[in-house]
Length: 85
Image 1 (spheres, one colour):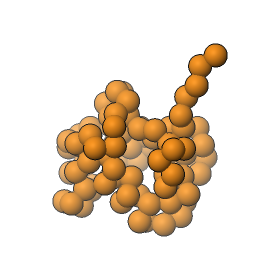
Image 2: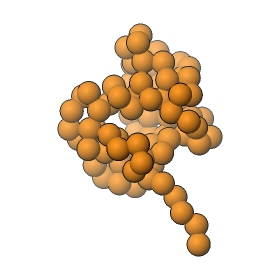
Image 3: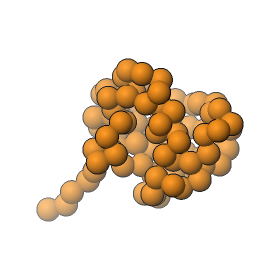
Image 4: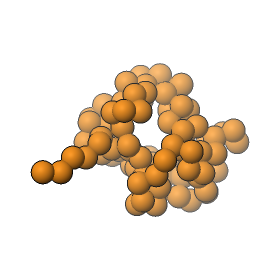
């Protein structure tokens, strides 16, 4: 499955890219599995994405739970939690 992954704010600073196209292994089919796959790649992805309390994700511009399924061609964005004021 091929997807487009975007990184924002601290995640972008940590990984050093704003976006990348990735071809996922067959066993990666949910947002949590994608995050785990990135963490398994080592640094810098591990430090940017390992703590679920410090990172949020969206699929096709909708904030999602970690068990959200992925589809080929989707856009996934990783970003820090947002607070209002």
